[in-house]
Every structure is written in C-alpha cells, then in structure tokens.
Image (cartoon, rainbow, N blue to C red; front, top):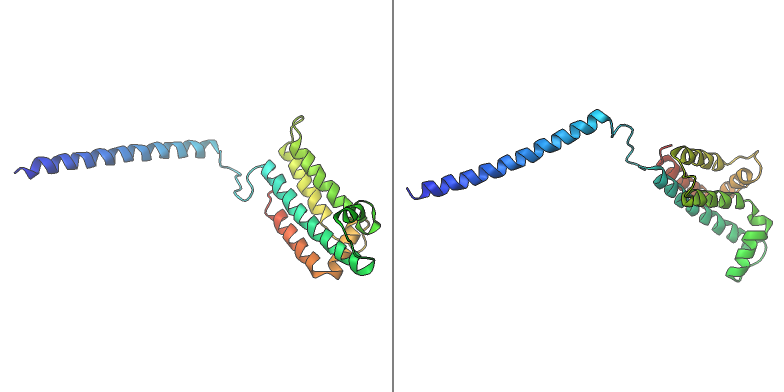
Length: 179
C-alpha cells in the first residue's frame, strides 16, 4: 500500500519529463517548418558554404600548386644550370630569372585573391568570387599551342609526373568549390 503513492509520484515525474521533451520537439518542428517555407536552405551547398571561404579554399589550393611548380622549376634549374646555394639567390631567381618568369602569372593571381579577400570597401561580392573561380579554371588550362603560363604549364606537365599530380590536386580543389 505504501508503494502506491511512491510509484504514482514517480510516474507523474516521468510524465512531466516526457511532456517537456515533447513540447521542445514540437517547437523544433515549427522552426524547421518556418525554415522550409522561407527557403533558407534552398541552394545551400555544404561543400564550401560562403564565397569568402570559397576564395580562401581557392587561394590555398593555388598556393600548394604554386609551391609544387616552384620546387619542380628549382630542381630543373639546379640540374640544367647551377646549384642554388641560398634562399636569397633562390628568391632573386624567382623574381628575375626567365626560367621562373612563367610562374609570375600564377603568383599575381594569388596576390589578386589575397587583395580581394582583404578589401573592405567596396566589399567583395559573391559575383566577384565566381569570376575569380572562373579565372582560376581558365588559368589552370595547360595548352601546347598557348603562350605564357598556359604553354609553360603544359610543358612542365609533359616532363614531370609530379606536376600532373599537383594539377590534379588543384582541379580537385576547384571542383570542390561551387561557382
């Protein structure tokens, strides 16, 4: 007989907890319905969500490609011309030697992305980001009959498998960015 009030009180507490959880669940359901009706999630792409993040992702991928290409050109220079003995000499070659000149177009493009990301006024827009992503796709198109970067990019990919792998990695970054 004494257990009955105890069990009843316990059942009432469990019922209150259940009702509280049910109320929270219903509130969440209402929130999701509002989101659905206002289409806040329409067009959401979880791969790379906003244009600033897309530009950072693009920049980072291009920097990795640039580093790989610089390393390959350095190895070719040391094999064909002379050893590079210091960081200062290497920097001077990258800035002034014709063997590295073709990479300056990629360097300048990366700088352009950095400047756009740092720009406060006028603020960069999603359209600006889309244009830069399209420019990157065009830039990373090697061409046997091209000039400048396109031609040299084609040539390095013909002579070194590591360039092909770096190109593949850069394309994977580009394909992961929604334009």
